[in-house]
Image (cartoon, rainbow, N blue to C red; front, side, top):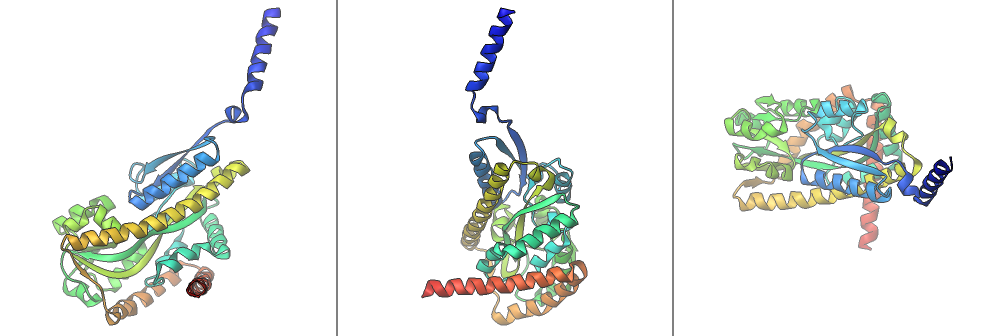
Length: 350
C-alpha cells in the first residue's frame, strides 16, 4: 500500500512540474496549395506563423494540389472535413461558389494596387465570407484572398493582337474549367475551347491539341510552356485570386488563441503571395524576352477591341450566375477601393 502511495505521489509531482505547453494536446491540420512559387511561399508563411504563434500546439502539414486529386475533389475533401485548409484558384471554388466569378470579370481591374486592396474592404470581405458559408452549407470559411495571377495570352501562332487574330489563326484555346472563362473565349472568337488539366498543357501545346492558352506569366514560364509557345500577348484581361479557405467546423472548434493565430497567418500569407507573384511575373517576362519570345503589348485601340467584346459577354454570363445583390456589392466596394487607393497615392505624392 505504501509502495503504491509513493508511486502515485511521484506521478503527481512529475505532472505538476510539466508546463502547460507540455500538457496541451497538439493538433495537426493539412493545407493543400498550388505548385506555383507564390502559392508555395504563401503556404509556408501560413504554416510558419501558425506553428510559431501556437508554440507548436497546432502544426500544419503542406501538400501540393494534384497529390490529393483535382480541384473539385480537393474542395469536396475540405467540405467533408477530410482536409482543414485549401488554397484554390477560381477553378477550385466556382463550382461551389459561383459568386467568385465576378472577380474574373474581364478588365474589372486595371492595376494591382486596387486588386490587392479590394479584399481589405471589411464590409465586402465579411459579405463574401458570409455568402461562401451559406452557399457551401456552412462548410467553407474564407480566411483571405490573395493574388493568383494576372492573365495574358500565350500561343504557338501569332502574334495575337486583337480578337480577330484568334479566329484568323484558328486558335484552339485551353481555358480553366471555369464556365466564365470558356464563355469568354468563345465570344472572343477562339476556334475551339479545350479544357485540359494544368499538367497536360505542355503536351497539348506540343501535339497541337491546343494552339493557345491564357494564364499568369510566372506560371507559364515555370511550367516550361514557353518551350513550345513562341508568342505572348500582354492583354491583362483577367486578374484572379487565390482563396484561402478552411473547413468551418474545424475553425470553429479551435481555441480563441488558435483562431487568432490562423487569422493572423492568413493576413501574412496574402501579403506574401501578392509580393512574390509580382516579383515572379517580372522575372518571368524578362526570361521570356531573353529566350527570344515575341512579346506583344496591345495598343489602347487594340485593348478596346478586346474590352468591347469581353466585358458585355461576361456581363451576360455573370448576371445569370451571380446574385444581383453581390454584383452590386462588388461594384460598390470596388469604387470605395479605387477612391481609397487614389487618396493614398495623392497623400504619398504630397
